[in-house]
Image (cartoon, rainbow, N blue to C red; front, side, top):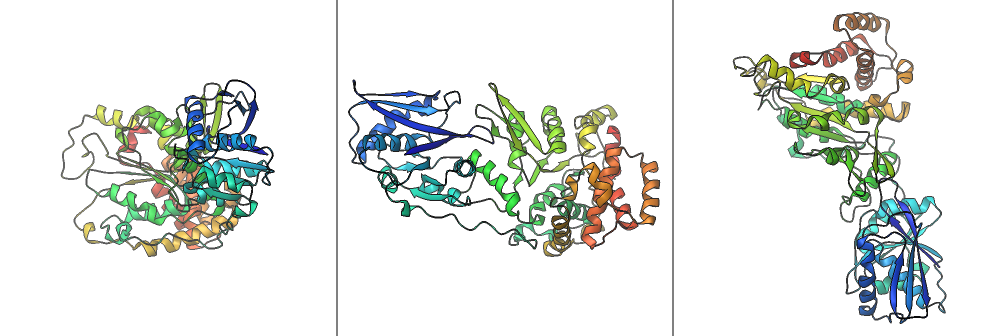
Length: 506
């Protein structure tokens, strides 16, 4: 029999072969294979757990080998694999029907098994290498059984785990995979996420609807208390559920980070991450000893919302530029490199100046021109140029009486646009490559004329031109139009053009 475990480093991780040799000599347990402190401590946990579970611990010299030898093994997830390998070596005369098996779990001294992180990622990696059976903690059973092709036994203690090695029928077949959605599905409506209660912000709500329909980045800036944060926090209600293809990498990332909800097999709702302004560069981008995922990877296929963005460190804001463009982030640690997916949608809410009153009627801005300029330079023009939708948020007494559309009404056009994009290009309009834009974003003759005039008037950069075309494509999709109309171009230019405090950056 061959037992494997999993070392969760970065996004990929690696399978680890657990081998045990019993030899004559003074009873002791030796371990080789570049194990860290937590793995070495498993020798004592494993020995006590085996004895407390009613088994006889081998009175021989035990050598435990974890290979490949040059890969560092970290974490307590090796406990159960080592224990079962020792028991299997001590019972060689008993034939084990289960030949090759992935085993993960942390042991208590009583012999019970505690959940560990990375089980979904381990099961997916094992399947890709031809291993289709696994024994995992009961608390991680839903993660493993969701992997197509994997036969899973969710064990609560060592005794039941060892018995499963003799009974292949104990292993459960994986569930049917989540169907690829032909129609767009949303999460159940929540009264706390209702857009109809937002008054006087029709331009912002329309911008959020377009952003949700095409996956576009959005910036909302305005004075404190104008409602920009409240509106952006409700953006989650406009996001469709993830497809099977979108859900798989998200579930893997959350499994590796240990954030997968208990007894939940996969992530179906688009992630919506709101990091605090004190977040470090490592917290946002990722890193650490094990190259853990950062907020931009936890927001993969979802949203990263930076509230009060002007309070974030400049280094943190600038680190977003490359991942926004490439959709991935590469981390290096101690000679090892890993690449996490990071296709996130960026929402930014900020004040127009340090005091918050710049450009606000009937209020006095106490900031100097220099301080306002420095405030916006913190974001930098290259970062802001990657944001498709810019909305100044100001509220008048007359507009305050006007309510927005309901969440249900906003979802209708989003569903139409999302379904069109899934069938046409299997990705969002915001992710279109330069070579795809001119074949997919076809303009009507009148739209071409108006767009040419707008490019000259607004002095758009090549990136801004591409951004406008993708925005207009989304607006046209929301109306079900095959070609981009003049009205769609006008609205796209309106949301893209530079206004207000942004003029300091361009």
